[in-house]
Length: 156
Image (cartoon, rainbow, N blue to C red; front, side, top):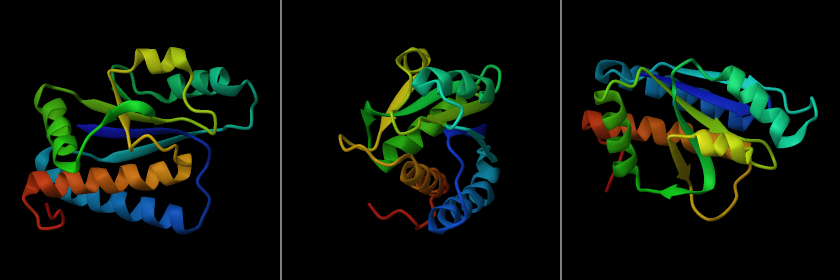
């Protein structure tokens, strides 16, 4: 199952970029044997204007055809890492070929795009900067792959 991060904004060189790159590399390496990955990042420009609706148009274009859509949203489901790993495995095992995680811009995700989602995931009630959400999501993807592989990275 290919994983796509469809995100608003460009991640510049720096600590967040280094962390995202590292976790993607780890996920791709550990997930391959389990039919997970690779991860592809699709960045859309947030400076074109149009607010959330304009960003939604760009995000829809970035989505692979037929992809299962998971939006990152503070109103979404909060789950622990083992449950997230099970969710990924379930999507993989039920034939999902492409899974797209959408991370909105500073104002969030357009309500119409959010309504199209198959799943909404939250990292809690707090609102996180979208660049940090990229780091947290890629780390959780790697953690999920390690849980599914029975590797010692995750300690319950």
